[in-house]
Length: 200
Image 1 (tube, rainbow, N blue to C red):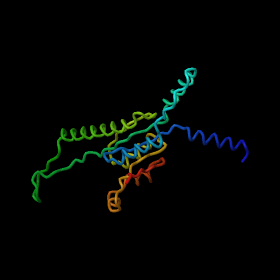
Image 2 (image 1 turned 30 degrees about the horizontal axis):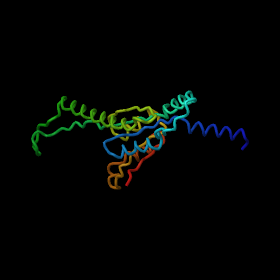
Image 3 (image 1 turned 60 degrees about the vertical axis):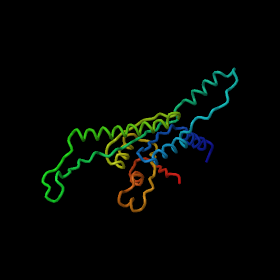
Image 4 (image 1 turned 90 degrees about the horizontal axis):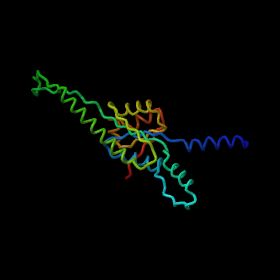
C-alpha cells in the first residue's frame, strides 16, 4: 500500500469515527429497555469531561472549546410502540346458551386509547430525562401495532445507523410460543441491531 492509499484509508476511518451517530432505542414498560438506553448513553454518547480552566489570556480558545463541547455528538430516537386495543366481544349471559353480547362502547374504546397514549408519553418523558445532560439531539416516536413489526417499520422511516434493544431474557419455551422482539428485529430490521442484555 503506497502513501496515497494509506492517507485515503486514514481519512475514511477518521470520517467514520467522527460521523455523528443516529441511533434508535426501543422503550417499553420493562426496565431492560431503560438499561439499554443507559448503556447507549454511557458507551456511545458519554458526558463531556470537565477540563481545567485555561489562563485568562486564552479567552478565545476557551470559547471555542465550550462551543465544541456543546456541539451535538449525534441523535437518539426514542421509540415506544403500544399494542392496539382489542375489541373483545363479551357474552352478556355466560354459558353455552348466550345469545346476546356486550361490545365495548366508543367512549370505552376512546378512554382506553387515551390511557395508552398517556402511558406512552410518560415512558418517553422518563427516557428523555435520562438523555438531558448528554450532547445529543433527542427525538421521540410513538406508534401503535405489533411492537416487533412497528420497530422495523420505524427503522425504515427514520434510517438510524443502529437499532438498540433491551433483551428480556425469555426462556426457550416463551421464546418458542411468544417469539422474541429482539430476535425478529435482528433478522428483519434494515440496519445493524445491538441487543443489550440485563446485568445479573
